[in-house]
Length: 230
Image (cartoon, rainbow, N blue to C red):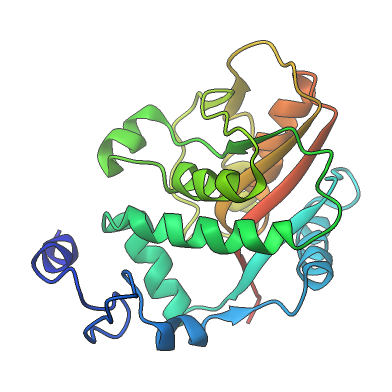
């Protein structure tokens, strides 16, 4: 609450370093963004993402393509920015991250088969608590770059789950199992599933499994950040 009040009173300061923003900057200054640790290229991020998911699920789950823009480290400037986006009401950061991720995906050559973008949904009670779903904001930003429709209501979270933060790897894997369902008949074959951060991949896999069980043929993943084990 205090952080939200601070941003309301001082909207022209960087969310990370608290320095005054330039007129061309929004929420986060260029210096702090430069301290985010990007992947060198799309293949590198996809390779690491596949390794993370295979470490948790083995070869029991396969996704089509995967894109992550940044490497996530604890106590980093990126963590501060993502926390502000997710918990402090700075949804405009989601727009910024969505544009960055959309540009990153668009520079890849193999996106033609993607038909729509689906954000990982929040449970309705958690969405009321936060007032918005940061994954939806990110997905909207990606959609503008890829010129693909964002289908916010295709997937719903039918069961309230506790935050993945602080859970063990096994608890993270079990927590979102069976939490998602498709809300209407599926007419698309290839979906780009979007979330803010991937740690073990459990949430993405649970959401993707619901889509595949409902008739989607292929699911690709996109996330702003991928947690790196330290």
